[in-house]
Image (cartoon, helix red, strand yellow):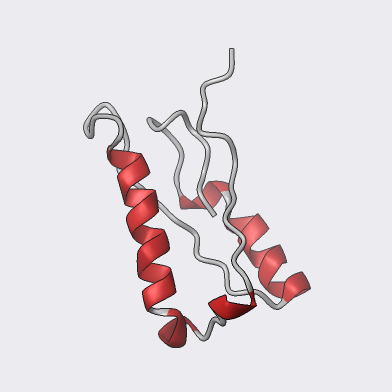
Length: 83
């Protein structure tokens, strides 16, 4: 799960409840992803962090006790700034 915040705000607490519900209701392994934020880290650093975490999670599925061959759900809240 990736949190919202227009790549410049937000943190792990934003998706915590969703991860807990997915784990409880679906029996899924949920990886709650934090990424580096602007302006300290220029765009698209956060996107790269998110991609790297997805790759890490698939490579470490055994350690996470996950079964990616059953499928992956990649999601989260919008990172786009809405006005």
